Length: 191
Length: 191
DNA sequence: CTGCTTTCTTAACATACATCAAAAAATCAC
DNA sequence: GTGATTTTTTGATGTATGTTAAGAAAGCAG
Image (cartoon, rainbow over all chains, first blue to last red; front, side):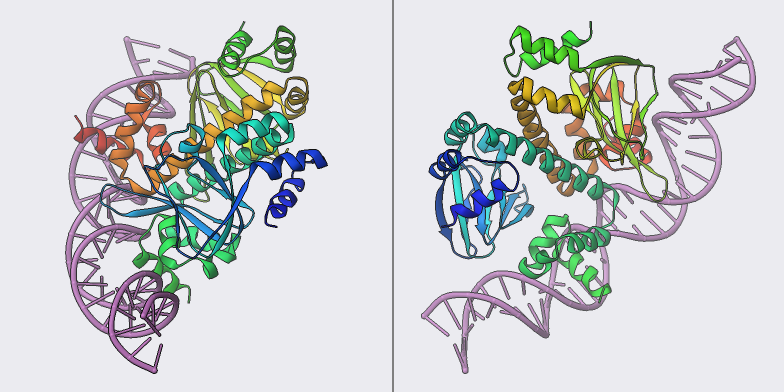
């Protein structure tokens, strides 16, 4: 069962009693996605946060010119969601698509808030998760304003070598904030 | 007393008993900074998180070429710190300077962790704070990779008109990831 | 396997912003 | 208030990356 991946992941960060595990298991629903399937569209009511137990997902938005911009790339044991919409129970600004066939666990905001009360360690887990996510994003922002694209690409691949294998160039380029043509040129030079 | 600004701010987000307020008051130390004073240098042990009750601060790092890059601009009722260093009890990557004369409350990691246990609402407060900070930073990142500097400047000033009054152009430019010369030209066009 | 679609590469040219330099304006220290 | 320092402005020129276009390569459906 895919839920045990989530339990293992949570146990690696905070400790949980058997009863607490039951509360958690009860709060999530599991489902499958095949490759390149849409999970959420901008404008949809953003009801759920998603935990990936297998596969690879991306979130992106579409600008006024109709161009896609990838905001997140996420693999196993990571969360993906339209957080702003989810946390404020409003509509999504971002799309979420699978890149590979994936197994997902989802939780609604109601259930998550209930879980914070039943399982205080979950509040701790999410405080730490958001802390780390904030620090990581702040660093990514520092770099995006400071370093040239070729350096950002080199560091990304060094930190997450998976990405080069599992994510098409077109999405990596978008994640780095450059065009596929530019990334293709960057790759050529480093070859 | 400046600590009451913090208590008011916390009460606006979570509810606190009189006893809990006492725990909080006990955990913080207050001090003053004059204009353009250094609070933390890169390489220092990053011992504290700082809450601004009055004034204006910036955090920045210095790249290999010796150029400053502003990461955060913060006013009253906001936090500023070298979060990575603070949370991992390691050394700071960023500098923190006052822009205006400021009144600051500081808390050490030890005391904060104790506070999480004595005052569970603080864990909730920080979970929500990091949640919001993460969402805001993720949006800023989306924009920095997508929009041109003149649009980012226009939106920044629209969202935080204070900044144009209280922060020198040189630091706003850096915060936007452009040179002062470029921001000066952007301002000229919109005049 | 075969045609169709998507992804990747390459090239010529365009543009946003950086760099360098220097002067004007504002702020600060005494 | 006066000179020194910092900040802002302006101009000339350079560079990283975007845009447009088109073909090559890879992946996919039947």
